[in-house]
Length: 63
Image (cartoon, rainbow, N blue to C red; front, side):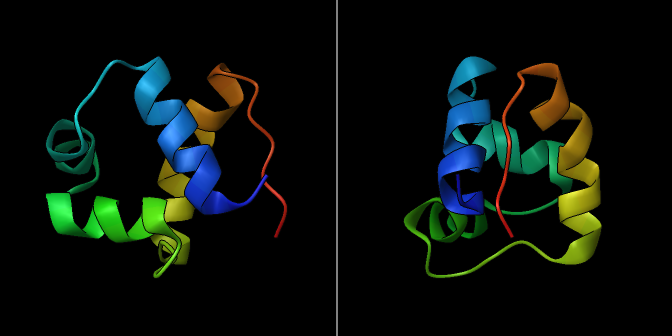
């Protein structure tokens, strides 16, 4: 699974809007929207912050 799919999947499992999800990581709704659309990818810092959430929901990401 690519990051855009994984981010959307984890956000939906957490029952959060894009705005709420973005607030956890200190980014805007627009940033989350671009991640999920696949037009931008999170920085390495954000990817590291995402890892506990991906692991919690057993979501694997292919680099």
